[in-house]
Image 1 (cartoon, helix red, strand yellow):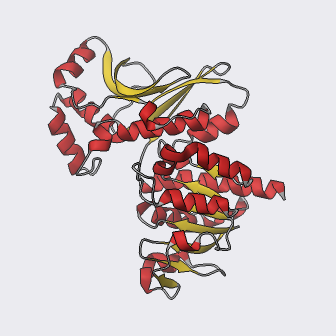
Image 2 (cartoon, rainbow, N blue to C red):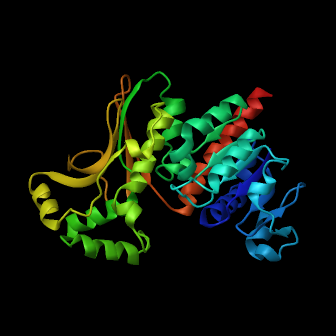
Amino acid sequence: MKMALVGFGNVGKAVAEVMLEKRELLQKVGFEPTVVAVFERDGSWIDEKGLKLQEILSKGNSSPSWVEGAMAEERIADLDCDLVVEMTVTNIDDGEPGLTHIREALENGKDVVTSNKGPLVLAFPELMDIAEKRDRILLYEATVGGAIPVFHVAREALLVNNIISITGILNGTSNYILTKMTEEKVSFNAALREAQEKGYAEADPTYDIEGIDAASKLVILANGILKMKKIINDVRIEGITRITPEMTELAMEDGYLVKHIGYVDRNRIEIMPRLIPRSSPLAVGGTLNVISLKTDVAQDITLIGRGAGPRETASAVLGDALYINKIRKENK
């Protein structure tokens, strides 16, 4: 399998590092990709005979395979590769540049794995339609829940089940803030400041605390698992900025926690603060994410894990790549 990495920030570098660390294990399961291109913002490393990932990680653009100004959107269509891994920064305004990268790859006969929420939030039905028409595979485990393999579980392990609804905590920043407010009785602003100091929240935390990031993930879950055709404007969204320590304390006294909960079924899709029992499987703290699938046969299946982080995301990306590699080998 020939493979191209698009985006070489924290996640892209983590994917390369894990591929090097786990080389022997990957070989044992029959995954020995030749990485022919790695695309950055201002150029790329290209070698159709195969790049040396260790050299790229250590030397950067001083590597002899570096091509200044060679951009992914100009090269993907004609690149001789089987799989494109799209890991550029999420943009939910217009989905670019990731949306163009994914379209170009699928249209030109390449399978795609992505960690980028933006294109899927804006154009999920379109992209899946292109993939189906071109007989390609588009996978996106890393877009929701970091390392949590929710799409794999739904796709493989729950085949005999009808999945009725999905409930979860989908943003680690907001969960950290609410956990801090509950356990230490600090104000929202104090908890936010600490989250920023620890690197859990961005300098501009709007997408996290207003629920936009979680709503984006909820749209992908709705479309990917429940086979709906939702967009972010369909989601009823309420953030956590109105929550006070008094609210969290009163909830605790009654045996509840205030959590920022996403929920979707055939009739409703929303993300908002909710009271949940302290004994609930959803009662996870810190930056953890949790996703619960309600089914007709298995009943409730709940998955808990780290919702962010370069290596956690790399785990999901490579899991998808391994799955595509397996499918393509079986189809030969």
